[in-house]
Image 1 (cartoon, helix red, strand yellow):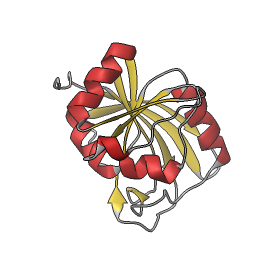
Image 2 (cartoon, rainbow, N blue to C red):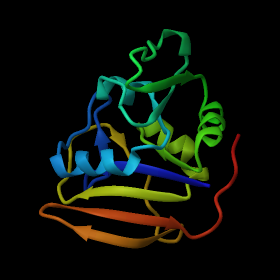
Image 3 (tube, rainbow, N blue to C red):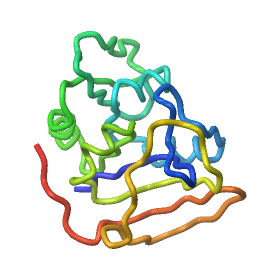
Amino acid sequence: MRIIGIAIVGSNGVIGDGERQPFEIAEDWARYKRVTHGHPMIMGRGTHDAIGRWLRGRTTIVVTREPARIELPTDGRAVGHAVASLDEALELARSLDDEIYVAGGGTIYRQAWPVLTELDLTEVDAAAEGTVFFPEVDPGEWQEVSREPRDGFAFVRYLRRAEPRTAG
């Protein structure tokens, strides 16, 4: 079972301002779509609202205090669920696939941190303004296994050095 945290992160750890992410890099969005396609994604309501739509080709599981208030997709082009906890989201995602992506925001990353097996980050060479931070990637906990440099950013993968804790 792979549970992968995926994010675009400024050099100062910022991932957003509570409403949107600070970087819009076309190559990052294309890669995000390619990597997550066909797999369940777990995200908080704020992240889902910031994206502004249900993403095709994957099952999106939105974690929110009020699941009944989330308008689920009905057009058949996207699949979505709303649940009340990360544990419930993980249980649902595990029933769908053995590769799960955790896509933010800050609260969801922190809650999922103990169970993540991998990180798939776009590390931007610039600091960003914002109030939402990605958890610190401690080299004692995470081993960098690949880095694909680009102009002003890099795609970086990390594996957890020890077995993550189980949840749900």
